[in-house]
Amino acid sequence: MQINILLFATLRDLAGVRNLNLHIAAESLTVADLRRDLTERYPHMADNLAAASVAINEEFAFDADAIHDGDEVALFPPVSGGSGEPPEIYLLPTEPIDHDELIASITTPGTGAVCLFSGFVRGETQREGHLPQTDYLEYEAYKPMAIAKMKQVAAEIRERWPLIEGIAIAQRIGKLTVGQNTVLIACSSPHRDDGCFEAARYGIDRLKQIVPVWKKEVGANGETWIEGEHTPSEADRSHK
Image (tube, rainbow, N blue to C red):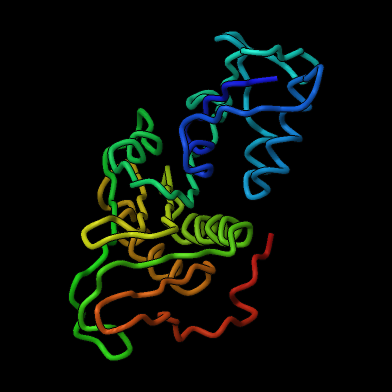
């Protein structure tokens, strides 16, 4: 059975592709079967796949519905605007981060300010422990824990700055060349003095401490893994 799968928003970024053309060796297939198959292929997306909405040939479908050979199946997170919960986005994408898309995803009708920090690959670094010239970086992550710790960072932000509305945290993984964006923290609030500047600064600093992501610098003079100096303590545990 040949199935064309379209992925949107968080699912697209986690998978690193917009669509999948899968051959599934089965005579019959339901939406629930497809969720299980995709979870086996992409275990780091398990929570997102479990929560995803599904459409078959541009109509909503549910776990017991059958999928037929040649069907177009779309998977996407619940559409924004219906839950009343403050918007939060956590990503480990392999594709470039779309700043405008992420800003749009964390704004509400009450948003008047967004503060965004975005890091980029440097070609030259004058700092001990780094290569003087970098051709590219390789990022890797302990994915399930990285997403969990991103959520912890967001919870800590909300505890300190309760007027923050939306939060987006994205850390790219894979090979990144000079000039590409590597990490993004964005916080929205009703007004600029409601903590969005401070929250974004706290978010990037805290990400560097507790989110398990590492980078290797590669250049003409060799390659080296860059390791941080923060040693985890009880204060770094999630208290949820």
